Image 1 (cartoon, rainbow, N blue to C red):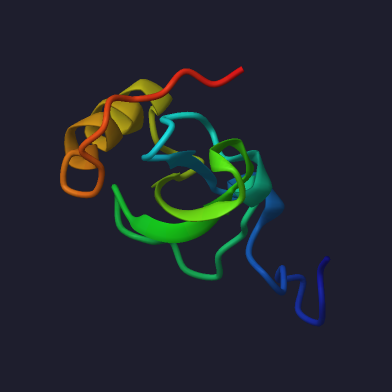
Image 2 (image 1 turned 60 degrees about the vertical axis):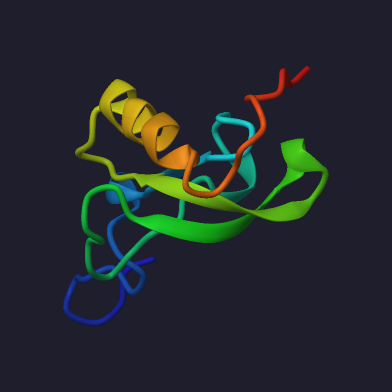
Length: 92
């Protein structure tokens, strides 16, 4: 939604972020499309609720519009051991 001056109020929707849940290593669809006024640093981690993990709050790594999914996924898998010790569970 644009407001006065032609700027987007909550950031550009074409630049919306996605997130990978670091517990189940799946894309967190609940957090899909979060828009930012200012871009976060690469490999930003955020606490978000993950439906696939039973609706609990988990650590999620941000995938910015300009990031390569495979690179972010690999970094999330590497950083995951700082938060979760169990194996990645199968979803579905």
